[in-house]
Image (cartoon, rainbow, N blue to C red):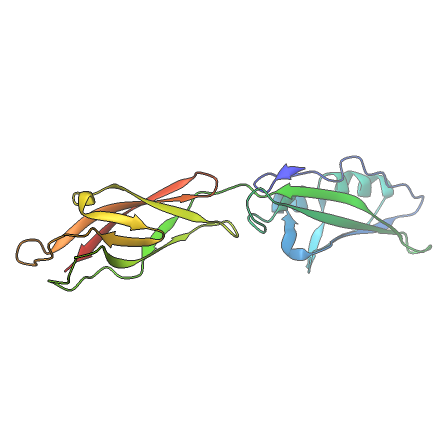
Length: 212
């Protein structure tokens, strides 16, 4: 088992024996799950045929064994939710052109999705009408986060900005606190920094400007 940010050499102990020259193919159970690294393809002599299929041209069994052992698999990042796992199964087919091809589908790599920090915070609206009533807290807009991971959840907090004392967060809504005075002549814009924290505790801070 590896992290989805790591690589694996899944065929390091594979043995190929045949008195004739052989062709070899390696097929992923789903092409979207990952790729063999370009360097390992160049070094081994395997080529991508597309769709998760990789082929090695006819060569001796000894050279084919050496070639397949050089393949390095790079799982696709963030295909599943953080801390979840995804298994990739490889089918090896060896054909000497004389007998029926020999296949093996026992090689599997399990990748665990690593939690990544959010990469951005957006606010659905950043303008408030002057003299709007703030008898109760006034919602400026809804906060949302961009994150490389699938299925991440976020909490929001105020962590800075010149006018942070005027703001609060309610769920995913950025609000001006009750009693705030919205007078353009006195203050035309407000600065606040919002923090997005994902379910794994990783954060991203975004400086926002709210205009009247």
